[in-house]
Image 1 (cartoon, protein in one colour):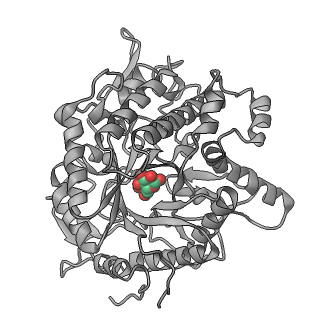
Image 2 (cartoon, rainbow, N blue to C red):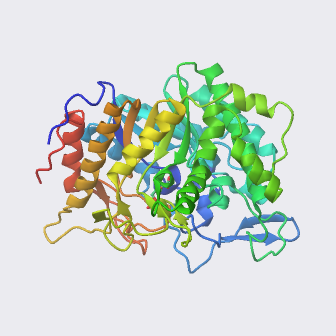
Image 3 (tube, rainbow, N blue to C red):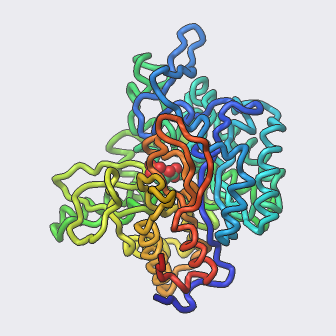
Length: 496
Ligand code: BG6
């Protein structure tokens, strides 16, 4: 199967990880915990924190019976040179990761950054650049420092805007000229479905000290979102001043934009539209620069309008995103009779009888490559901004076979189908900066906190019980992705 002339010459091919799912070394060189360090799986309703009555703060409270795999993860902190070399062998010209905010400002509220943290990213970015790989950087991939949540109440507190500005300014100045593509907050549109990791929202002070999520209503989350939007606008502004060549993207989880009505019942069509607006809302603010009209009715009816300072709306208006980065894994079907359940990779309502493939069990996410093309076209129609697919991938439970090989043909097929639909979207007129596979090397799953759910072209010997020698090994898909990249997306035949 050949795709002719779809991808521009400078198309960015690569992969994406997040600091908290790969680096490990969770307390090394001055780093303090962040929100993801307190959970096993970001959907957790029970983070390992406890209310300290004397100090009136939430603080870390690790449980003996839980395995926090992310604390060591795949030890990317110490092994990144070997890993980047393998990615370069696959032909990557770009690689997305996040800076772990609490390596740079361990508490989050310090005046001065932690030099050891900055030095780590100096080494990481320099290594990438030596291999001709452009770093694509997220400022916070669910990585708000725990102190800012436990002592300040997270993003509902306006002071986080200033702390974030200090952090963003520090890294923009330090890595100026080395990083061209930045993103502020990973999947910012998950603030409602994962308020703790996404927006650092917690019951503060708690109404029930056993329950960190005691009485959080939508007003609290809209307030946190408003602060995230203001912080995003300020970071966009500061980046343009410090490094005018660099670009700042809005980053959203857009699997949920591929939500189809279950049939032509107007109730289902309208319901699907309202569900999709929960995702549009975030890019509507960040890319158009103002709150969309539909949210005012919600705010009135729920009494959930956030408080704003004078000047906030101007900031949002004047500092819109330069491009749209998004993750896409699967689509969903909305039906008025079914509850839409949401998790890391998207949403689930009804099963879609028209889709031929599903990811292997136990996760079984539906596979819908055309959904990617649909989302890309919709985004282009609405915003006319460049798109950057910064996450797409397939999680499989896999271990080497008796010949010590990992034959992951399903992963190759998933990649093939999505590259093909992305090419179609480009022909449809979508401007696309690049395509980054999620988890090109096995990392800890964000949703489940497990190693068992693997996305990589590179296998890492680490297991759910914490055993494994961490050695790296190629899967069959390694050479397949290499071939796709080498041919700039023209040769997507699978010959394994
Ligand atoms: C995205 C996140 O939602 O989905 C990643 O940005 C995450 O951090 C990815 O790993 C896949 O989800 P999961 O739960 O399979 O790891």
